[in-house]
Image (cartoon, rainbow, N blue to C red; front, side):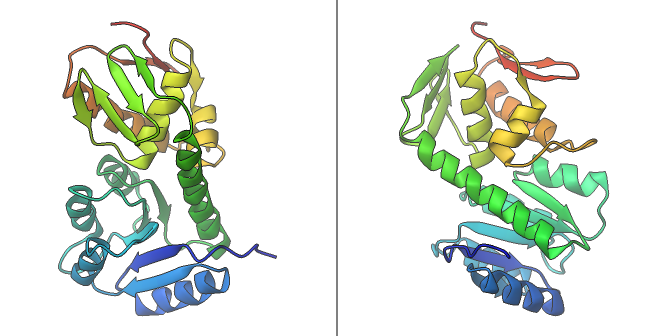
Length: 235
């Protein structure tokens, strides 16, 4: 039996009426508050309207604006976690979604229990972010992290990070100078076991690197081939 949630608000943006009706029924039965937009333009309006959603389920293939365009526009000013739903299921869609700032992806068709597991993992990540706010701030190798205010900077330049990127940077900084394996990042940040051929960790770290590179030429994060990543103690 699935344990009930606590009415966390979820926005579903998908033009498949039959699917969204089923998802609404299933997620509401497990205790979530669900709002549905069967139009991408309306979905973007809702997502940026000031109404508080803790998670957005976003379809890729939609008329007018596709899911990637919605995500790009959303990420200009909002960091709400996004779980992409893609019918094509190829690597290109998944990688592009992660590059644009999605927190996770799920290929269609999917099992409802797997969807629920992904949703719970994202909410555990948000809970972890809340717990992190009670910890002390960090400053290593010209990177500063204020966990209490959930803000980061590199060489005194502010970084705009998603919740996932922030959590990965925090984990690397807590373990600065030491290898952090992909398995550990997947478990502690994404809340799931690392699967073979899963490139989501690589893409999140790649996005984080690009944002750090906008402030400095120094390589802050070193790849340990076949194992994971290490935050350099000094440039």
